[in-house]
Image (cartoon, rainbow, N blue to C red):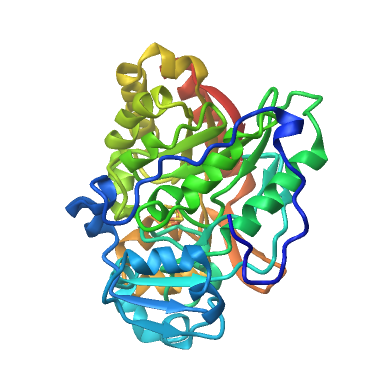
Length: 393
Ligand code: SF4
């Protein structure tokens, strides 16, 4: 791999001597190759017609590789991927919310390479290869600070990101105490602010991260996804990447999970991903409280129990996450998907909390939330008792 454009990265000591694992490149599909990436279904998700790019991102190998897969697509140079006035600052873009996600792509350089402790979904939140998403879940927290548009931003200095993660893994040494994140391995979330499966439609960042963790036997990558991308089956993770398929009742998903793979398709893909070498978990999230929610979650758990083969159940676990929302996003959503707000915005059941950056986030009031979590845990215990709940909040 070549060096990133932000100056020479600190020397990366050779990994093989420590872990004695081969770290061979993945057989990642290239843009335009015969994989899913080039299919009509993939183009319905991502049909890039305009690229906004930092000049530094354009000269990286990854930036050049991405553009080579997008012949003829115009590129607008921008000083920062983070604030692009014609995207994030134009309130007229709200009416084009999903179209912009389909047609716009931002390329940037990730300058801050920091791994944060987490302790819930993962031990650590790694700097991921993207920020933003081509899907359009109405409750998604990623656009809360993005203004009026949230297409995918791909970070093209993936070598620096991978080198940072390797250094961090090595600095931890072996995991000494099992915890709910994992009994043996340090778990690194690599997709906090995007969806790695969709990123893989247009670039190899996900493949590079999966490849890196294949060579890190004390650590494991983890990402949540709502999109079934069969190209990921070729990445040979050898058990070092955990895919968490996010699921919710189909009626909620049809209203809230805009542009995602159907929930039944995500569940049906679980065995294929396990057989391809992934660990497969489920995110029961977000849990949205509305009339009939308990029956619909019971039906979903019954469906899991009916269709998942024993080998998936045996290694599976779940995170349960209650809905949180945000006032600014509520107002944006009213401009493109007001029906979603009928269930997401429930001031009588929710309490507000002002975050450090001044944003007003809302979540179910404590007693309502605790009662709902107890009911959902009860449903899991009776309908899918094999499903270990890693944590619920
Ligand atoms: S898939 Fe995830 S990142 Fe993408 S819009 Fe939905 S919640 Fe946000």
